[in-house]
Image (cartoon, rainbow, N blue to C red; front, top):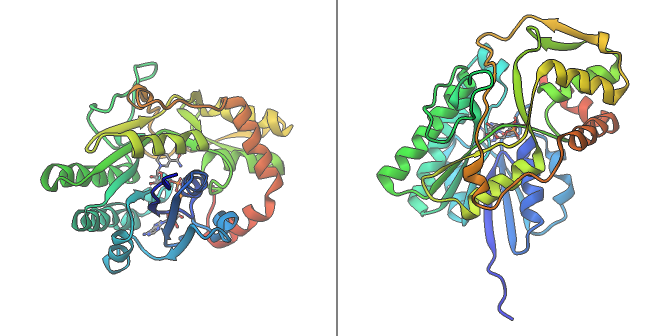
Length: 330
Ligand code: NAD
């Protein structure tokens, strides 16, 4: 029997939320090796990868994607790069955008150049926030819609995407982009909305809901999100962009109430707080282009939300360790 050729994936940001689930998804495949490059910022944790420490197909490198001396030799040994490392929290980008420019823009440039020099294919993990705000009830954005980012975070991701498009057009780089909707699931840093609401509800504290809770977000369980990335990596066209969506859209207030229901918390704990500056009302994307590659979500929102809430209830040490290293939360 002919052995299956081995694929070596270099994954940036693999110690973060989606990154660690990407490692799980990649190593579940035969003949796949994964090297994670991660700076271990407040959002990254070595502990998120502990399940793979004994696997000889897994390696971890502590380093910065914006340093070409670190990136170049790693890219040279890889068949494929998945670039998921980023500064990701919108509120932090409003407080100070410099780390977002350094990691999300300069880091992407460094990776693109390394991939160009070595002829390595790259998947750029981006966000639906690059589209900017969508109208209430309007159709989902398709990939050809203009990018109109409104937060410093979204602008830094749009800048990174524009670099990817330029490297494809100018140098023929094999780069594909995914724009994902909001992911949720275990190991999401406890400053993002689902863990923040869940931990508050579990601890009997107020659930802080921005504005009047009318903003709508589309939620997709992280394993489905990861499967969308891998479908685009394996079957997507170079130079193309794919939305990862088809999740459940609901207003933040309803999300908070559902989490109260799952934890047994009193809905009176839901508290309205001052709205985020420039808070996008909704995104709303059309995922049919990715679905045409044979991808579709597997998990129901209700089951996945219950599983996620239970995970946070059962992993309080993980939460404490993350918050102890982070300085802020919420
Ligand atoms: P996260 O904040 O949980 O993790 C980010 C990871 O990147 C961390 O492990 C961190 O240590 C690492 N990192 C940060 N700066 C780095 C640098 N300079 N060099 C190397 N590593 C660095 O992020 P996430 O929520 O898992 O998001 C992963 C990717 O998916 C990001 O590119 C994000 O823009 C994108 N995305 C996320 C969502 C979501 O809902 N979480 C939605 C759309 C797109």
